[in-house]
Amino acid sequence: MTTSPPPSGFRRAPRPASPSGAPIPAGQTNTAAHGPGGTIRLNKRMAELGLASRREADDWIAKGWVTVDGKVAEMGMQVLPNARIEVSKQAQGQQAGQVTILLHKPMGVVSGQAEDGHQPAIKLIQAASHWKDDRSRNRFHGGQLKSLVPAGRLDIDSTGLLVLTQDGRVARQLIGEDSQMEKEYLVRVAYTGVANPLAATSPAATYAGVRASPLQSIDANDPVQSDVRSVFPADKLALLRHGLALDGQPLKPAQVDWQNPEQLRFVLTEGKKRQIRRMCELVGLKVVGLKRVRVGRVLLGQLPVGQWRYLAPGEAF
Image 1: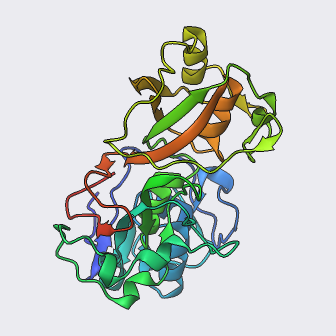
Image 2 (image 1 turned 180 degrees about the vertical axis):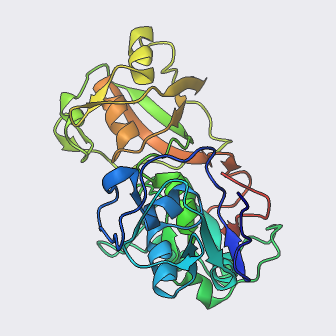
């Protein structure tokens, strides 16, 4: 059996190693993600293959930029896992122009929509705050702000690496339901010795019934003022690594180690609301400063507070 070449101007998705399922029923256009006979909705399959986000896939399908087994795709159609999916040069060109931006978010700035008078992070993405040492050859223009959204969030009084992207593939990789992306944080703590059980069910991060005070900034040159490490019980550190639950769900194992006598390093692969604060409060710690320094393989590095750079060519999470 010979395989026909893709139509002119189309790029072929990688074919799975082995086919599965039954033939697609004639005229099948189910809207469910999974259909009869082992089929799957086309936009979901394209996301799984890393071709596009589901929303982006739907846009391309509507424009006639996607073919399945040599035929122009239809919205909502179901395909077999071994279907030959190809996208046009127009789709490839649109995707090539998308940007991913890395911002060192300062305190007092919200990650997403403006709230309570606080400035949203996207307002910091402008030519004046573009890091002068950015090695990317991209040039900033206003069109790069269109559909630029945070892939994850940081609390208003947390600092560090915030990723904003136009690329749905990047967003899915970082915050998709099946994402296992590591995120690393430096966390300054104080030891109270009194656990706050309310933190297990309250994302509000209350401490002994009082709303948590604003966090402090974390700087590499900050002096150590107290030796929390020497008084914090080893069994509580073990609980931070594995054994806690939030909102009735056990947390995934985490890497938690001391960086200095009052600062912990957390590496998480999930992101519940105010997760680190709540974890700490369950074992008698109070977070007084929090900074994200890594997402996957991408480091915050020397990027100054309030400035941003592009994800560089060849750089990947």
